[in-house]
Length: 283
Ligand SMILES: NC(=O)c1ccc[n+]([C@@H]2O[C@H](COP(=O)([O-])OP(=O)(O)OC[C@H]3O[C@@H](n4cnc5c(N)ncnc54)[C@H](OP(=O)(O)O)[C@@H]3O)[C@@H](O)[C@H]2O)c1
Image (cartoon, rainbow, N blue to C red; front, side):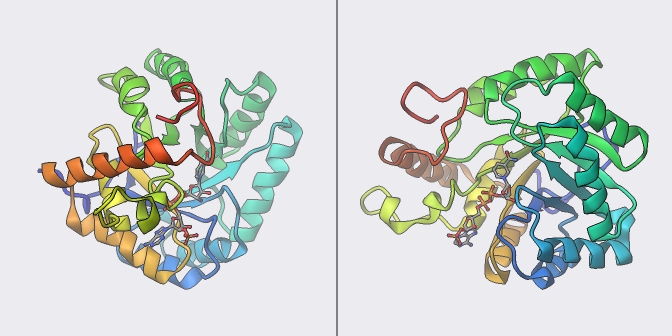
């Protein structure tokens, strides 16, 4: 029986990561991030919004235990010349010598060659150790996986949407992962922008899941290495951490999450549609 407290290898990077990672977009207080790291989370992702408080948390944590945390910085840059200055600034702000991952954010098609050259150059200089790509075009990952399997992908890990409402990855992503020598797989939007926690969006007679169960849903899929959470405060962070102790959903809990997810899917349009979604809908 898998448990969620044990760190897992992230693809072929040699890095071991906690099953839960923390994103910085909603955070205004570095203290609860530092507390969560002391409670076993070791993956910190400075993006999509690089909140200064999160940068301060990285600085404090790295001073104490740089080698035991995995730090990711994101760039949305589409201009190759702007990428290095953006990463240099992130290094100065956090006081670290390198990031474990440079995440190229929201690439729905292949990043263009000049941009990849800029990312590779940062890797060659040791300012970042690995490259990751996030996409809102799930079917495009199939080509990335083929390149990965052939040893031709610049990326060590991929980030995509997966939750109880949006289960499309079960059909158009996970089955295409290489069987051996897999890349790392990180998922986002686990609470579906909070919809899965909203009493007003539930099927009649159903109470909302707890946030921990949304993270447990994603992590219970065998192809998901890590789910991100975006806590806005200490309470949300602690609730997310409970997923690690609770472990995988049992079959009844899974059915309930799928039932609620299917209802939300039918009645609530997504904030952002994705490549791979059925026409006019959102799986
Ligand atoms: N690069 C990309 O392509 C990409 C795509 C998506 C997300 N991201 C990033 O990934 C990180 C994680 O974001 P996410 O959306 O995946 O995280 P998430 O944990 O699914 O959602 C975060 C939001 O869910 C609500 N929430 C979480 N825990 C809660 C609780 N215990 N009780 C009530 N509400 C709770 C909060 O919203 P309220 O308190 O506001 O209601 C919180 O702001 C962020 O840094 C985000 O910017 C990146």
